[in-house]
Each structure stands twice: as C-alpha cells, then as structure tokens.
Amino acid sequence: MSGNTFGRLFRLTTYGESHGPALGGVIDGCPAGVPLSEAVIQRDLDRRKPGSGLTGTARKEPDAVRLLSGVFEGVTTGTPIGFVIENTNQRSRDYEAAKTLLRPGHADGTYLAKYGRRDYRGGGRASARETAARVAGGAVAQALLDTVGVRVVAYTVEFGGLPARIVDPAGAADRPFGSPDPDVIPAWEERAKAVMATGDSLGGVVEVVATGVPAGLGEPVFDKLDARLAYALMGVGAVKGVEIGAGFGAARLLGSQNNDPIVSPPESNNAGGILGGIANGQPVVVRAAVKPIPSIAREQRTTDITGQPATIVVGGRHDRSAIPRVVPVLRAMVLLTLADLWLLNRSARCG
Image 1 (cartoon, rainbow, N blue to C red):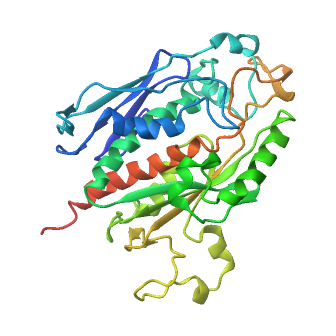
Image 2: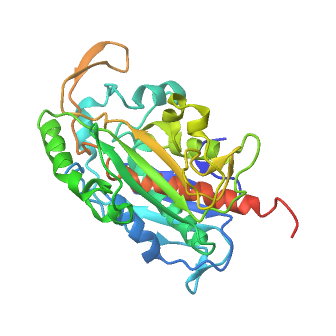
C-alpha cells in the first residue's frame, strides 16, 4: 500500500506536490443523492488557503477547486468524485540554494532514506500544501453527514503556550487564529509578533468537537472510534499528540472522578463521547498537539545529503505557525473518519 488513501468505505485518495502543477483527489464510496457543489467545498478551502492571517505564508494561492466527476445536477451520483486544485504561485527558485541540505524538523532525510530521492521544492509530497485535498474531501464528508445531523467544529484552544477559554466555538472559524475566545486574541497577536521578530515559529493545540454522532458508531476491536480518530489526526504532518475527552488529564484523576455518571442530561464527558471504542451519543471531543513550523529564519545545524556537517537558514515563503490553517485540516480528518465509520456501521445489524 502506498499510504495515499484514507478510509475503508468512504475513501479519499490524494495526489500532488507543493510545487507541481496541481493537487487533487478522488473520493470513492460517497452514496448517491448527497447535495454537493464546488461552492460547498470552496467554503472550507478558503479557511485553509495560504496568504492570510498574521502567521500566514506570503505565498498567495486561490485554492480554487474544480469538480471533475461524480456530481450531476447538484447531487452526487454514487460514482467516484474527482477534483483538482491548481497551484498558481510556486517559486521553486527559493529552494535551489539549499537543495543539498537537510532541513531540521522536515522529512527531507526520511524521504531520501525511503525513496533514494526527494523533491526539495517545498518538501514535495511531505508539504502541508497536500492538506488542501484533505479539506476538500472533508467538505464532501460533511455534506454526507449533514444528511444524518452530524456536525463538526474545530478551534484553537492554545497558541504559543497561551490557553483560550471556550466561549464561542461556533464563531471561531471567523476569528484570527481560529479562536473560540475573542478576549485572548490580542495576547496571541503579541506573542506571535514577538516570536516572529526573532525568526522563530509557534505551535498550538486544536480541539475538534463532533455533535449528533449516533451511539454505536465505531468498530471493535482494532477499529475503535478513538483509535481511528487518533490515526486520522496523527496522519497530519504537524501533529505530535492526540487526546480524547479528558485525555492525559484522566491519568491524574481517580476512577470516581473520571467515570461519567450515566444520567440524563449528562453531567460530564471525560470519555469524550466514546466508551469501549464506540460512540455513546455524547459529543465526540478530540484534541491535537501541533508542533511549531520547522521552516524558521534562524541558523540551524544540519548535514548535507552526503553526511557532511553544515548550517542552514531556511529560505522561501512559509507560515510562522500551522495555526490557524491547520484547524480546518484537523476538522476534515475527523469528518472523513466519521463518514467512513457511519457507512460501515450501517452493516452492523439487520433492521
């Protein structure tokens, strides 16, 4: 297997590189009759596209999606949904000076070890630009899940070490940094400016919450809902940790504190909406730790492709944090997971 396809029944295969002519994907397994248009997909892509926000790259890309197949008269046909997103603002010359150097924190050395060659122009297939196709796939998954009342929101709960209160998660997508707390934005902006002035970068924590997830979603034993969510989010290059519900905090609780009383209405959700790997009907809550962007304008020690010691200052146009552009990517991965498991769950029993 090549590792370019996600899902079992609702399957997304992506293609393309950061500095190639285009990115795109094929979605197979989406049922017929789901309302879908380019505008629906574009709405989510606009939240991820480069060239905006305080920490965003200077590379400007419209990320305009074009549907190639699988949709007719505004609804899906049940056949593969093909789409393309053209690259229009590549500047590959920025990478020429360092094409023989391995960038710390990047996949340069690991791709070289695996394939014996690498695309040094922005990281090629390892570039975060690939995630545009995931966001497009997630928009199709949301269109499917809309038909059964499942909704997913995502927002930043920590940026540069500064936490946010969850005041208005529904409005986070329209705020700087994807913040659920309007009051924390000035502090986040000050933190970003101070770090960017030194040529460095920042990380953060993103929370994704799915509501309307039907009880029973998830497969024992190896395809537990929480296991599939962790797999999905860890497949995003910037993510270095995932937790469900109380997560690592549960390790510091007593059993009497961590157990959620089975009462109506629910009093707590330390389980994050999942018990025994299967959804219990409460909101599914997952958080992802996002590392700082490794492309920084500071001198770093490294080696060249022959193993000789060297130093590097990474050039080119880069984000200074994956926040907020990673937020819709993580939301998309949760959507893809839920759509796939929802289809799989329909075969669990008769009637």
